[in-house]
Amino acid sequence: MQSVVDCVFFCYNYFAMTKVNVKCVASEGAVIPEYKTAGAAGADVCAHIDSDIEIVVGKSAMIPTGLFFEIPEGYEIQVRPRSGLAAKNGVTVLNTPGTIDSDYRGELRVILINLGNETFTVHDKDRIAQIIIAPVTQAVFVPAASLSETERGTGGFGSTGVCS
Image (cartoon, rainbow, N blue to C red; front, side, top):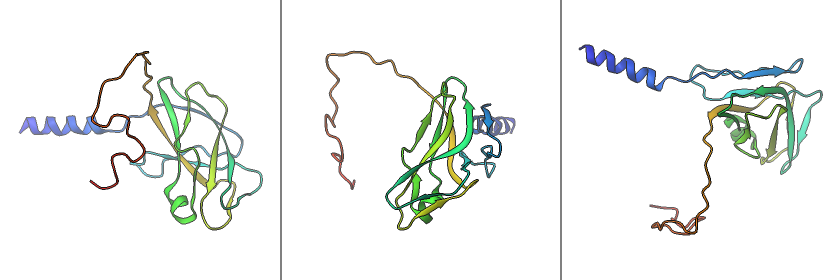
């Protein structure tokens, strides 16, 4: 029976969320990112604007957040859309996922695009995106004269079909 308890303890720790300290400087009145539930992967980011910003259909706008981060080396912050904004209003993050590198110290600004059917208005402190902290793996790009053969080869952009 002891081994079952040990296994459960091991599995719980193996799958527990990792916490990483990220320094955040917030301009006066800006909202510090916040996880809305204990299991949330993304922390909500809010607009920090002096006046409303209207995004007409088919257009984009860069929305200030008033937030500045010091991300530990070996990590990035990914800026992702909020599903509710996309589903209800057709508003999403244009360059999703946007990446904030660990050596960037400027303000986080979110590029929103309106793919909906009517003008969308962003108000101060609206939750406009979510951010995820993720580990980064850097590649070592090795010059080569050729590549190994694969079944797929050079086929891309739908070459494997839609259905199985």
